[in-house]
Image (cartoon, rainbow, N blue to C red; front, side):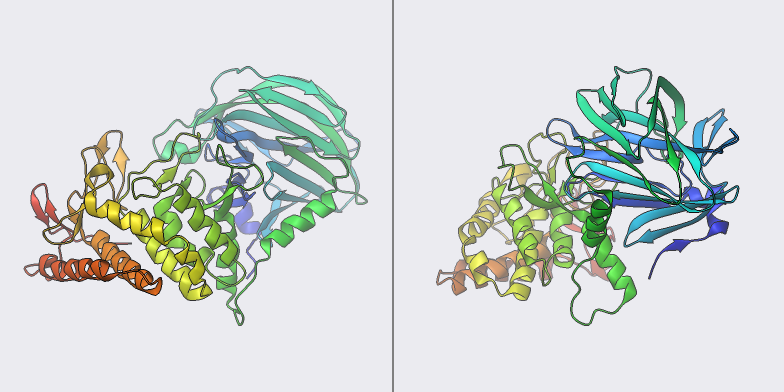
Length: 516
């Protein structure tokens, strides 16, 4: 089920603007853009590096502007830079004849003046390095001109005005220093380096404008690289936070990136869409280099979404059964579960690990309860009872904290056995949208899905305690009480459905809402 986009869509700017590609590096870093070439988001770049604390994800290398120079001196831009009153946009749709994904990796093809050029983009696994290759598929040789654009900024921000960029020319590119971080760019095949530091002003990000956010940015260029493009050899551009190591080979790098996209399938899995989804899921499982952790044993975790989400406990535990609880990936499921158990605090796993290196946030009622569901799924597939047994003290401790009370007034009500929680300024359930200090849907009290998860956790800990030859009777009694109370309390007879929250600040809430 290969994804291919043909000439008609590629050359329609409005259609090409809405189609985005993404490659990732297994650290939370990525490269992403539109097939049109336009940077419609502040998050679009060819290298968004996942840097150690305190930097976090950082937009390093935004864009490469390609032009072809014929032997007679004519220059044909593969992307035009359109200046309007709204800002400047790159548009490569004029000569773009095709776009497709090769094992999930983006491939562009242009045709201009009898020449067909192919461009590929990939990232190296667990390395902050992006690679771009150019190949002349048909036609006579030409000179490829490459102008790189840099931002060196936090991925949530925009760069405005001339910043403190320092650059050093090398034999095959530049070293760029700005905002206390360094990036390297080099081109292979004996390039000609023309250092001409300059700025490109007011690059427009359409998606940010549509969201009512800061929508323009100024980008730094160190100059232009010229290199011969012929049918005999590819042109390779490499950019990263470290120089290319000795003996590095582009063909080997591409092969490793392609193999990284090939994942183990369950026997008999012959559904093309399912295979695409499995491959897409690979982007979300990452290694997190947490401060204080040994450098060779990074934490394993799950990114909640690209382009801007970090790793969230709730999203991790809901998605883990589909992402990693299957043959061939059980080691990673164990590692993700252990990462969260290691960060338990007052009976809660983190709601979020901030990129900036700040302490984890523990403002959720359901993430920890979803972990019991994920543990049960893991046990069901793996049969690895020892993994559960070795962590039973920590799991029983979670229940104890919820019974006696933990952060944000999360506590079991001894009168009915239901779990309650909530505090001004916090949204502790999956409906956690906030606008500055305004909590859109507080849901303080006893939310229905929280208590379904609470009952599930109590039943599981009772069963696991008995299996470990410990008494689980008190957990069973709490589960029975919670079940009977939920049956009595949550049914909203007048509406013919369940209350969303009971015992809230103004009573029971009959709002009809979906649950995850």
